[in-house]
Length: 374
Image 1: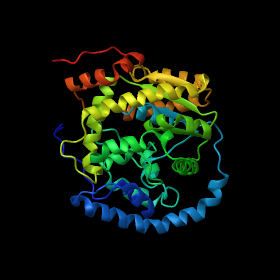
Image 2: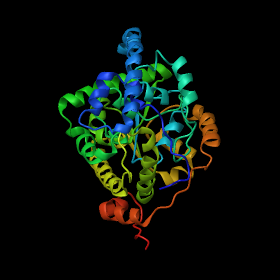
Image 3: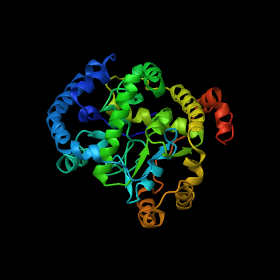
Image 4: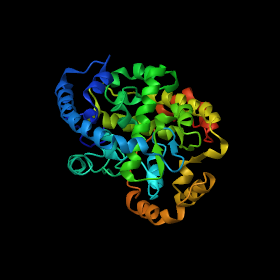
């Protein structure tokens, strides 16, 4: 697993954008390793300081947020992790009509409006310019998925695995399957999610919310309840590739996020099981989506002809604005997707585990089974 790069580590946690009460809810029931107590305490102290400004944002913008509504149905990008959701999200957010959660809002969901100038500039200086493992560009204004932001607003999230990898199985059972959560927790999540979207729309002055969040596969029924005319784009990629890639990705960034240290890291089997459960959940959940509100695409085709497929997406989902967006889309493709991603090899264990847990899913997604190399 040694990539030859110095592991990315950071003295504070992404929970600095939360509030102290929610931080205590996130960590409840999980043990922080002694070596990470300074990191946690510093995070807690900074979050406590920010709570004063959080209150100012709430008071100043509360009236505006209550009135805000999206002019167009939202678009939800779903797919297994490492399936090309980031690229698709970035391109759809080139549309001037788009509203979306930025990287800054992902870290500071309570301060995205009040701290948008001074804090954003400071954060841009101290964060890496590229994501660990895949060298994807990072900037506080770039589109970002919402799950870390949501964990800073309420405690139920599968992404607790990034803080507590030793408790992967417990978090997997308790937090991954959203519809199994108690009603009170789901109600709290829905309230915070609407607030997150409203802030994103106000921040970007958008008309159409564009969401990217693999965890939302487990929330499709809830999202349709909130947004009956929502559009969904499901993007798939070769299962062997995404399982290997997500395994490497998570273990690459754990040193920068963890509050527990798992010596051997998370295992490939964890991600093979996750792929199985996620794809099975999608195949059930998609039955709740109106056929004309769902488009399914393959990453392998999308990467070959992104503009053509985007045109088709706009047409099939009855979205406006593709022609006006093409110059920004083509500029993004030219400058931010240069093919410089770090190569990796799919190990025989990954082939074996995917075939063991999800061989039938490989076929259902339209890919070929590959026997594990010896």
